[in-house]
Image (cartoon, rainbow, N blue to C red; front, side, top):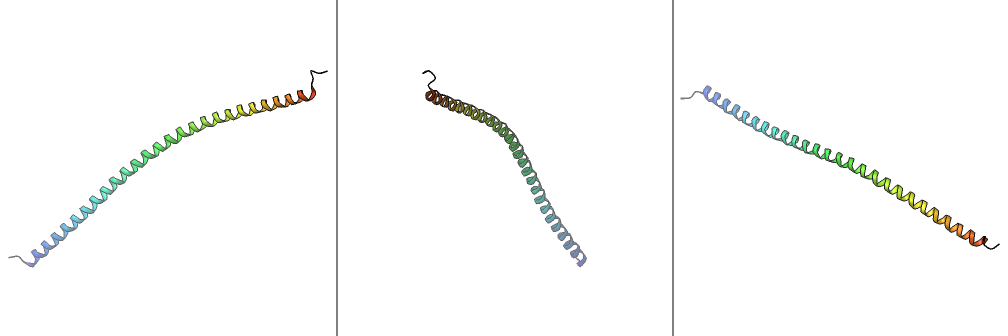
Length: 101
């Protein structure tokens, strides 16, 4: 039959196997979480690269739009100054009548 020492050894062996199985399951979960974290970091890195390239393109486009608007503003200011000068010249000429001496 079985003696108490064999029962104790079998019980210890079963407890050890259960601990190994539990530890193996915990390690599998931990490895899965690490793999998922690595994938998340890769995805975040890709999004950061896309954001950088998009911001670089946006900066260039914003500079171009800024230059275009500045030139339009300068052109409009010059045009309005010329119109004001012409109106003032017309008023002065009408008031002085240089053609009637």
